[in-house]
Image: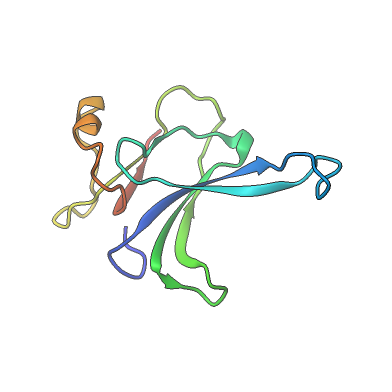
Length: 124
C-alpha cells in the first residue's frame, strides 16, 4: 500500500486515560497515544477494541490541510481478545501485487530490524 508516495509509516493509535490532576480533576479525560511501528517484529499486533486500537498507514512527507500526515486507518474486526496475532505489518516487495507474510516467528526474528513501512495485511 502506498499513500501519496513510497515512504510510508504505520502508527498504532489507541485511547489512553489522562491521570487525575488539576487539569483533569474528575479523571474522565482521554488522549490518543500514537506508537510508530518501526520494525516487522514490533508490528505483530493484537486487536484490542477495549482501547479503541486502530492503525494508521501514513505518509509523513505529505500533509493534509490540517497539518496532519495523509493516510488511511485500519479498524479491527471481531471481538477483542481473540487469541493470536491479528495484524502483521511487513515491508512490501515491488514485484508482488499483494504481498503476504512468508514464514512465521523465525522470519520475523530474522527481520527484526527491517522497517515495517510499505504494506499491510490483516489476518483473521
